[in-house]
Length: 287
Ligand SMILES: O=C(O)/C=C/C(=O)/C=C/C=C(\O)C(=O)O
Image 1 (cartoon, rainbow, N blue to C red):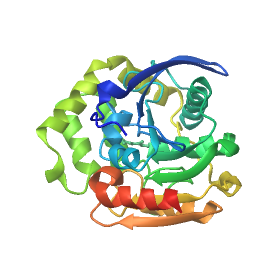
Image 2 (cartoon, protein in one colour):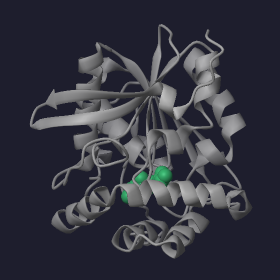
Image 3 (spheres, rainbow, N blue to C red):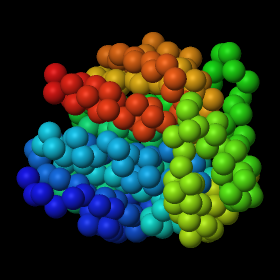
């Protein structure tokens, strides 16, 4: 393996995809090489990207011999803008199929955070033969919480931030996002604010999409039993965006799933408990 450090810039790639009605330029990061590929799919917060969501998780997988791809979903980061009036989970799944077709990748393991989890499940339903294993954190959409009023406080704060992208609203959202707010540095806030404000078109399109169709991530709980891929479901006990009981629904519905719950953890398990998360993922993929 090369000793060159993995950076966002050195791994940044673009591809033009045509998948059904989608004709888009997508941005992704292509890290490492190996016989098996892990695709990571980010969440739906303003300014999110594959690199922002998973920067603590790439190196260990690359060091273990996996190729790691981070796809920026349509409407985020350096990927093309889009207004989504249907299922965004299915839109992202089609984009991923387009990316995999374009680069000649037949099959991948999928790691999805929140919206990324919803999208990974949508991809597995549409393309079962192209999925190895699934790792789902804080998402998958096996249905709404039975205990926490929806939309949750975190999802309401995301909506407010999309409508009014200010540093104050960003701090409000991020302080609910993680369990331990002392881990949130000024540098992290600034990077996230810069990401958001660089692409105001993405912010405006998200608001338009939600107005056109408030159910961007439909409940596919009734179809989870179709998914045979082994799944590791990982949740934060203190998740105030997508509550823990929705993770239980996934484990109840998927054919072959196990659940790990981190205490002292909000909606970003892969970042808040990165070392243990990375060990668990490596172990799950290897056995
Ligand atoms: O509305 C939903 O179900 C999904 C919400 C998210 O995907 C929120 C994710 C937020 C991030 O991961 C982020 O980095 O902003």
